[in-house]
Image 1: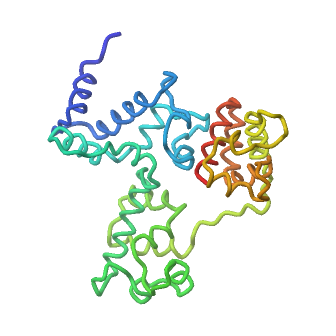
Image 2 (image 1 turned 90 degrees about the vertical axis):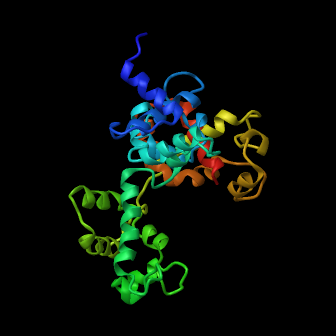
Image 3 (image 1 turned 30 degrees about the vertical axis):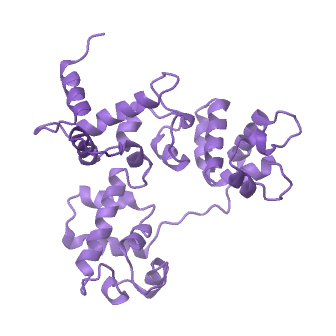
Length: 297
């Protein structure tokens, strides 16, 4: 197979940690995505399933945009978008002999690894910087300019101040709105107004009317696939889970996991399983996804 000379040159620079001027944006993140798949693709199908990576199920779901139970090169590249600088720095340090760990998995597993998340982090920091009159790197109620109800909701440690983490937590689910603000050439002079509006109106979801059909199917499939003695429940050995995770999942403390206990643990992923089933993902992949979720308990 003929190798594109330009790609081969970029791969050489990537492997040797060389950073050069004029490389197109995305060069390092795209090559890191390709390398990550190559290094972890056990069955050589050029995709990654949840059992081939050490990512959390939340991170895996986020990367698996088409919900087919696999992460392909396109999805991997999207997950690393905007991370060129961090990846290039790693290879530069590696070439210089610095003992650093490859950041790819961390960037993929971080909730802020997407460009939208990066923008939300940036906006949170700017919100504090623009309103922090006493230089404490936190905001009092007066400095924040938010309603008392919102300030109290965001101040999770009840210390009377908002730090960057508390403000960032208030933007969960609204990252795309922050990204849109920046993509439309939003400036620091208007970021406070935008964030204040988002913080005052948090994104909420209601699951009171949800029918958990697909997590019920997934739980049944998972139990049936591991039920070696055919008694309709899983012992600790059959489940193959860490003792602590098994204890938490075994809510009735009878020493076995039943279908309803498994389902209760994965209910929050009903919408994801619905898409997986709609895409006719194999039972093996479904069981692998369920297993990954249970291991994070």
